[in-house]
Image 1 (cartoon, rainbow, N blue to C red):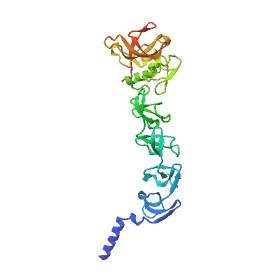
Image 2: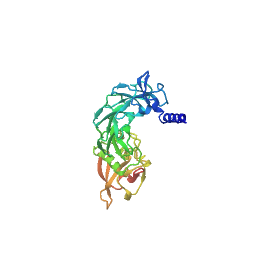
Image 3: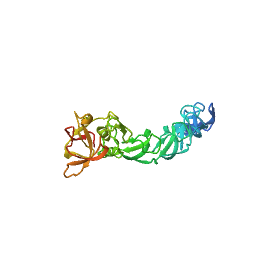
Image 4: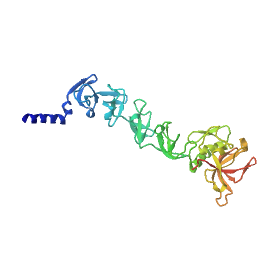
Length: 338
């Protein structure tokens, strides 16, 4: 009876703490000496095959490493690198062992941040290249301090294009950083996409405010930098943010492909008024952007934004039913206007 009690007690201890029997012993590997520990508790990197016991008991080796971003410790990537970033290629062992480095701070035109590897992500901010000492994929993570920006298509936040602009569009030329830091404007349209009336008018005012010269053989960029032909139909194509662009923008003959006839009473800001369709090519047709009624009661004349041969891109007043080459102007509505 006494023998059975002793045997049961020994088995109970072994069953309760099997791992502890094999840990805290010294071990030696080709990558250095260490201590046998479970892989989850190793503060360095684990090397299998040099410790007794179950497979999760491995030789935990502490080893420093040096990278262009600074010195650190070789660690298993699965155990994380608190307060720093993993940099590959500076530690012995398998690919899961990388150098954990406390990353330096960095300063950019868009604000200050911390150098991080792009693979580790920049939660709540954007990566900006060129301000960190390490490899090209070590970039400055600027969090919650990206400057605001204002464009003809609306206000937004400066972001790196690589981080995406969910629910909006990037507009270049309105942020202080590198060329791929652009203004992310929520709700701004893409090509041939739904577009608000306010954005159509804002895009028109972008050219009118600069008094762009009229030409059927020249182009000028829209707020995003995309060139459009600087005649009446090129101007309207730019306002609607449609393709094709450049000198191949739609003309007075082809604009009815993307616009439907409406009545004069239905006109709203961002609609079109023009002599469109067959027989209106070259100088035989003209199209304007409807801005507002001169007198909303009488509705006999309207305020327009347009590009014409005599004045360039201007704001004007036009009477309803004007004619060009004997063709009477009619109102139209873009098929994707919101």
